[in-house]
Image (cartoon, rainbow over all chains, first blue to last red):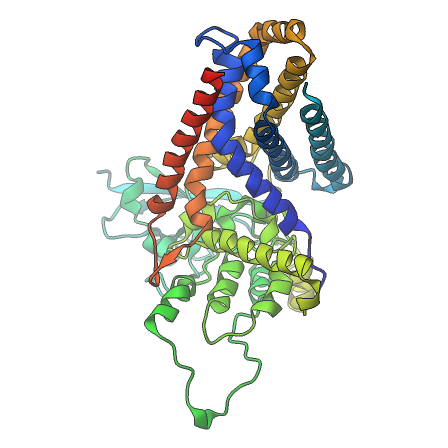
Length: 117
Length: 248
Length: 141
């Protein structure tokens, strides 16, 4: 059997990230980072929000969202650098940067969500 | 409607030119003429040195593909009158292919890519002729029929930026052709083809720009074939990861 | 070309094939190419959202003081502008994602391929429903 590439695994992560990002990010971005801070919509209280985020299910959902979205970014950004800038020869740098970034980001996300108090 | 239209045609003579140049020709703007008719008019009446490929004039041989005002087109199916408003038609050789002369491109690389996916029925064991033919239901035919419509005109390669960026990329038509056989109920060669297709230069080079499907004059939808195959290859890879003892 | 040369020795006798180099700006000047690049760039804003989300969660978990400082940060005009652009891109991502989904999934029912809209349509409905549910939880908090 010829050597099989690992692209399928990266592609699954990319696709899963594409789905969660498409469903969740527009509404979260609009409410949390535009409508609430700018006062377009009355924001929830600090304690209400903290209580919501403390729920295990919320933490799990936010971790899943962060993890897959970061791997979605890693895949797309890698190909954007290959094709958009034609720098595929720098793959030795591009690949660790993209996936290393996704791994580090996921670890940080896990740490923050685990320790939310 | 004006009586003539300007054709701006790429000329390249490997003996004289360092790079291609354009030559302008005025041709009659006839309602029933396609771009290929205009090129033949030039060759017969104006300039016999103009070189281009063509054969059937009815959109089935796939040899007259060229860039018409920047779009990959079969010149036998592209009417001059569609461009009457612009008053000028620019005819260039298919993009991303090496140019041999004028509008003629080198297709050797394309042909070897087509061949690399083993586009024929592969059987583990051929049954003797005396047992008759391999039967197929209309539904089984319908699964791959769309992919069998390809005429190898290479318009999808000229539409695909990845073909230009990565010359090793196997390309839309070759992958769609592989799918034509993979999805044929009489074929048993899917695993053999996967060794070629599931490489970075196979399906994974594709970033789903989708222009191959738009360019296809036969509605083959190579972009769809590639994405569907990504799913197939992924399922296969995950299976071999999760159940290594089942791997061949 | 190298492969072609190996397979076809006679190409040695026409050594002056002309090969055009693909321009660095190949994705400009053609809407479908530009749309493709914008679609791929949307991933940068997806990543930016995750970073912002982690900053917000960090502030939220540290205390009310840090949280209100973070709200001030979000009102900074540069941050607001970035978030407006990000919103445009993540919506663009969602739209292109749902539109391309049917092309990648050839679902067949009784041997016939189902129309694209049957896959894209439910995606849009689900998108609206998920957004409404998320908004309801956030507004109720």
